[in-house]
Figure 1: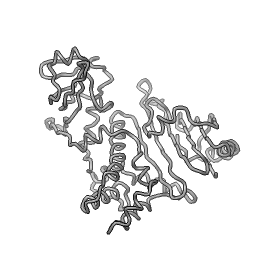
Figure 2: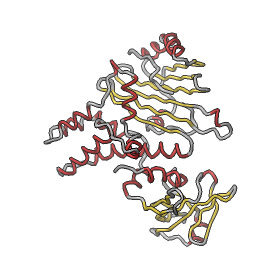
Figure 3: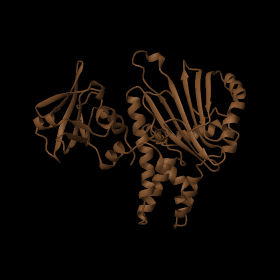
Length: 363
């Protein structure tokens, strides 16, 4: 599925629902609304000054202001009644407004709903490159060339260049629909396009494609999450860099909105990688005032830890030449605290994070 600009942008209008996947209603309100298990309802969320209201039929009740940032979101939802009498609304449609025309209600397809409720992270995409699934499929008739192109997207750590990193990001999937909206052609080596072609060919040949399809969900769910954040004037962007000879990098970037001072927002980059040679490494860099860096690095391998300390002066020179200043650089010979949560690939809201591209790891 290619997500249209209308649908992608519409997601921000129902952020209060999709932040958790559902909207919960206490038992008392559910009873007063007359909600029934399995019922499909039409609902509206409205901002009224300092209050936010949920309207179902001719009844309404207040929900937290933080649940909603737009105006007049109308959605269709399925009701589920829990054992304690409270209700859960799972959205199934969204209201779109095009310019000065009237608002149009568009039901969400099961696939689009699946994306909105898909857990963040790239576990399926990571497994696709690491598990040998693609190599096993290459033996199937007519798939060898396509799979070679997908595997050819992997980078090489030994001769990695900034332009290769840029091209990989541009072809990861985030920018596909933006290019199509401008009637521009996609790069034939676009990761999302190639994987989509593989899914289609597997289905045509009657071969189980669920494993490959889940990798597309990873990419498209990440696209939705990024678009949601942009609509809220924030940035949350994540991806993985697969390598032929190094495993992979899990990379995330975020800029969280500072409501009190828009000019004082922090930029944060996270990098996580695991390799037999260097062990497991996490890097976190917070960028303040455009060029001041606060860096933290966690390395489980003692040799990698010691090399990072020894390379500190070289890193300072490299970044100073680029016009960047290191305010602090802390290195720890241990796992990053909370790494189980971080490894899901989902950025932690409110945390200020920078990248691992600046790390000179020769190990």
